[in-house]
Image (cartoon, rainbow, N blue to C red):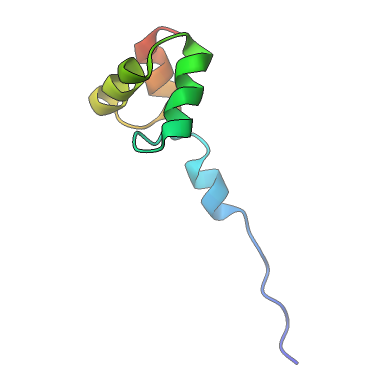
Length: 61
């Protein structure tokens, strides 16, 4: 019998610091967290990319 493959969390680690503009729950979460509107979050993502750190800096958190 073959040995089981080792499971990793690589995909989760890659996505942890991102804000997905197309995912409503991500936008709502970031809007609530920063106290800004969902459209402001979407504009910030479009302007600076989907890095959570840069989006939060742009929104003035």
